[in-house]
Length: 137
Image (cartoon, rainbow, N blue to C red; front, side, top):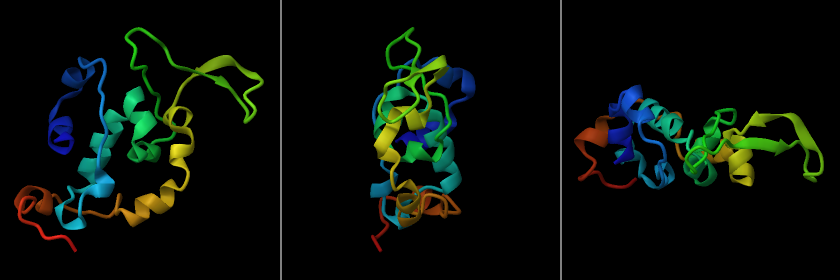
């Protein structure tokens, strides 16, 4: 599971993985089974630098200014437009961030985070001790 593997990797091992695909499922995990918010934050921050995650995982919206790397090896993602009508190029171009890649996915993020206890789970007890046995609230 991403909440076990990703925090266990050191930076060098994680940097050796050029493209990570998939999604995280914080919103679907029952409260009694969630890992700690600090474990989730580390996991999400490490995964959300990847374009595929930034585009699909609402959890990435916690890091709107986090630079994002392309899912295409060697490609540099740049934010090319500065306004809603996409008519004026930004000069100089700036590296794309989570908010650039995720766009409207981040709408309503603060409410989603509160409703899903993104920042309030204090320990990993349920994650490690009762995950397979925990009853839903």
